[in-house]
Amino acid sequence: MSAVREHVLREFERRTGATASVLARAPGRVNLIGDHTDYNDGFVLPMAIDRAVWIALRPRQDSTVVAHSLDFGEDATFDVQHIEHGESGWAEYLRGVAWALGSRDAAGSRALCGWEGVLAGDVPLGAGLSSSAALELATARAFAGACELPWDPTQMALLAQKAENQWVGVNSGIMDQLISSAGVARHALLIDCRSLATRAVPLPPDVSVVVLDTSTRRQLVASEYNERRARCEEAARQFGVQALRDVDERMFAERAGALDEVTRRRARHVVTEDARVLAAAEALGAGDVRRVGELMDESHRSLRDDFEVSRPELDAMVAIARAQDGCYGARMTGAGFGGCAVALVARTHAERFSREVARSYERQVGLTPAVYVCAAAAGASLEPV
Image (cartoon, rainbow, N blue to C red; front, side):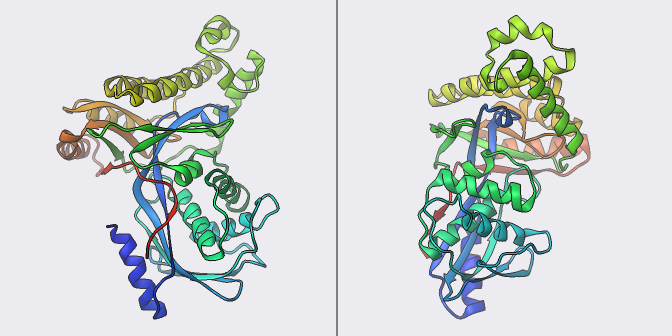
């Protein structure tokens, strides 16, 4: 039983004197393989993790939302019929989701109602595990439960993405919201970022996914991100395709010589990474974890050398992880320039692996990491109170 779940229920009752009638939950995520492929219409293979944002609530008779964050010790109040921007912070995600749910493209939605609730989470903030998407989808689930809104995981993910892009002002892709909304317990989720089709891929029961937080925070400034995206778009134009997702490895080998050296390396990462994601999904489904590990290792080298979005601490973490018994593969995960790595580890070795990696990383790098042994969780849900 989640300690956070019990905490929000207790605090709701303490603050209101009543029992919550709705309990909403949405998980964070880690991407096993497939980075910088999403905005190239490609493929990703994330999994929802057993760390989540929880909201205990009850509907109100008016259109006011009154929410208290236990993590920040703050209240947020707004009227869903007259939503305006407040100060930046966690409450803007709630306002943004309400705004998106009430927008014209929220097909099948009913009028939003107000609610009062208490929320908290155990998804680490700023670690690249999508705490913001977890908050967005937990909020969407809270509105769905309180206001009896229809729930479609893909549509709700799109509305949450709209909230982040257009209300909060963060230009994220769809992966974070879709895995938080549509994750499947004990499975990773293969996502086609063009069609939004998904396929659940089982994780072998004798394997653990270990998230390795380097205690560095992402420094992918806008100019660096925009440069890489522009290179990918330029390569797609020169190949005469809509996006690099439409270039296979054979086409790349035949025609990449026309690209300048930097654009060629950027494009090579995306083309080969898409192929690795599809190969990893097949290998994982077949229980071939050694092959998945090899593909993760290749992915890290490609992100480091061709896309150049790693940093020394991430490289050190990956090298330390790979040196441990029971580790099948490891790679940086996320946009890069800080944050987390992810490793695939034999379950019987996971605890020792975690201790040894933390000890070696702190000794070599001088930073204290956080290590999380994660299980694959289900997507956003309404839970029994």
